[in-house]
Each structure stands twice: as C-alpha cells, then as structure tokens.
Image 1 (cartoon, helix red, strand yellow):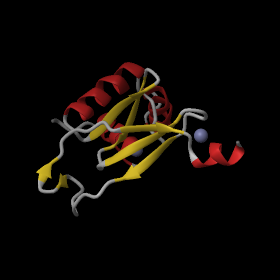
Image 2 (tube, rainbow, N blue to C red):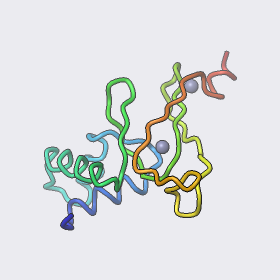
Image 3 (spheres, rainbow, N blue to C red):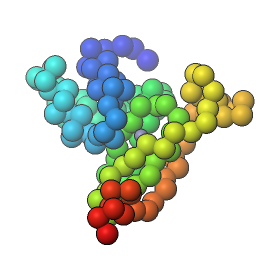
Length: 120
Ligand SMILES: [Zn+2]
Ligand SMILES: [Zn+2]
C-alpha cells in the first residue's frame, strides 16, 4: 500500500486513540493537521487501512468504530453505551493466540458496566 501523508495522519489518529472513534470524529481530528482533508478521503483511507488490517473496525448500534489493531475484545454497556477494552492473552507481538495468527476478530460482550452498576 502506497504511503500518503493523509493516510499516515489517519492511521496515527486511530492507532493512538483508546476512544473507539467513528469516521466523523476521526475526520475532525485529522482536520487539525490537514485542514483541507475531505470526509470522503477519511472514509476511503479508513477502509483501506481496515482492509490491510492496519486498524480494525467494528459496529456498535449501527455505527462503525475504528480501533488499534491490537488483539482485545470489547465490553459494551447497555445503559451508558461505553465501550471498554477487554485484554486478551496473546503473545508478545500481539497477533498470535496459541500459535494461531489472528488477522481479524469481533468479540463483543454486552452488559452493565461497573459505573452503571454502582449507580443502581
Ligand atoms: Zn454503563
Ligand atoms: Zn478497543
């Protein structure tokens, strides 16, 4: 995949974030570095980066979220809709589970997060 300044910028935003951003949020962050970037460019590069497994995407309530491609699962709270990273037991380079190479994964746990349980 050919490198471009725009794609690198989008990759860095997703790869440095723990917030499970959607495309529009990524677009707004990218504009701080590249003011004239278009939403279409952001979408195009997000799907390219996802296709090349440099980042990952998953859908919550119909909205695509983008994430670092480091193996972990997600817990999604039914009440406040927060998305919590669940670490997974993988080896050093974060790509193998029991010797099996992981290229894609989409495991979601749903429930009530700690905060919401406390409020009840
Ligand atoms: Zn919650
Ligand atoms: Zn995550």
